[in-house]
Image (cartoon, rainbow over all chains, first blue to last red; front, side):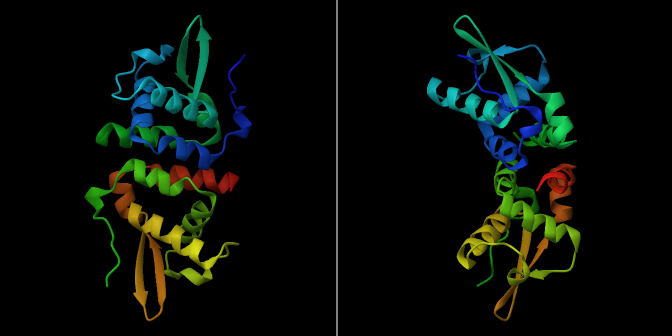
Length: 103
Length: 103
């Protein structure tokens, strides 16, 4: 079954801010921002359980921050940079700039 | 007793994003951004109970987004624009710009 991704025009600011309001999820977004190549969940260096990691990716996907594509048993993740920039200009860069300094 | 306000250097991105991740709190921030004069809680046009309103102001204050000063029985609220800009450059403007378009 295809994973749900909200269309660009349905992205909601409050949901995006909520998805970003967690240090682990900020690290995921930061890692994805550093390299645009889609990246499997298992390659993120986070000290959390697999189910917690899955939860974080789901929150990011359902808010419209990341795209997840299945390939075999792996899920590949990438940032929805253009969609975010279109709906919330400057927001992702401001978050990433702040996170770079403090996470 | 004085209300707690985190010092500028202790503001945390995740806490700030969480505080902003609610439509009612976004409206409060938007109202405060439109007029720099400190504004009493009772003058905000939100369709929520008094206790919910108090909760929202507390979340915003404890995250470092607003300053609250008591004057008699009223609390006057203002945005901590300079502190936010110092710690998270561009973030508040990006949120306000997005909120203006969508809230």
